[in-house]
Length: 498
Image (cartoon, rainbow, N blue to C red; front, side):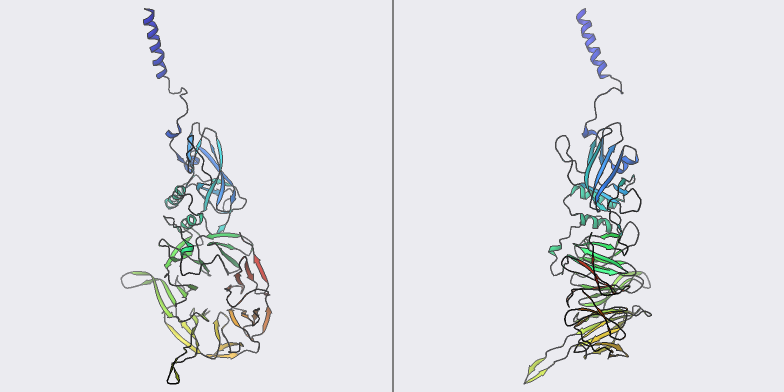
């Protein structure tokens, strides 16, 4: 009888153990059974708090996540984002893969997830992207997690980055800024037949645009630096917008336009032929553009109406080119008509029977393009000059000996100065920038030809100079520097880099 009671008691105790109440401590839930929750949702539900500090511009940040839950949580931070504590003080940051991935109990990488015990705090370095082009880059700001989800296209890109952590940050950020659903890693070294640049400069309205290793930033006159884009080859700032060339989904260069506000900073404008070298871009009203390329001046029409429908994005070669020597553009202030100076090379001819047949001299032409009709007409052809260049001040030429001349009533006429020069570099509004025969940069009065001052800039005939139509300043780069030439006195200024 005792044995029976003992056995019954043992069975009862075991049964009682299995039938323990729900509130009894049965140990933590195994990590593999904890469903991951996105960081933004965890913050929104009060299960975690998160902050960021010590940003490396827009590329990395120290992310701190603290569990506020009473149980284990697995937080997935990839695809969530941080905003600066002081709203609008810099860009927001989208969170990607960790710089060094955390490991689970078995030593496997956790990707962009964190395993947190109740109350636990973890800090790690995370790769980030900028969500706001045209805002200043992070410096000393602190950040807080945003309890809201990003648009699906951006979450998809960041999720792809977590799965492909070795992808270049610049390629990921380019997709974010273009609102592209896929990341395209462009092989800049494999672009045959193109003049790739490590650094180039442009200036407009006093804003200095710096393109270094295909990353575009701008520096305002008040010293504020803004991050504008990545994976960019060329930049063309205008009064209306900033345009740039960057690769599309097919890897070829497309033309894009930066919007001043909104979640999609860069908008697609048009495809560019892989065989073109885009030299200049001139707005022609209503979104239309004149694209000056090495093979022709093309009119891009953003939108045109037919009887039955609206036709978008048409391209017309209005002026084929044989040469890019003396190629320049000028926009009529009142009419909006576009004037283009061109060059036709001379022909050596063929010797036949002791005579040279078909020989011609080089000529320079002035063309006018009407943006409304897209028709061209030749305004003049000139052989008694060695160069022609146009700008807001007028159309100028150099005589065969290098004297500066100005076009009046269809003819080039001498100015009061008899100084000679090697090349016209840029015709501005209040300055004509020329290079003398000792390779000295000189500013000349466009009305009289009088030498105003010389500059200490180190330039040559081959130096690419960008001109500011608002200030008449010039911008160029050396092998290691970004440089501005001030129109006031010709002094050079070294522009700081990010």
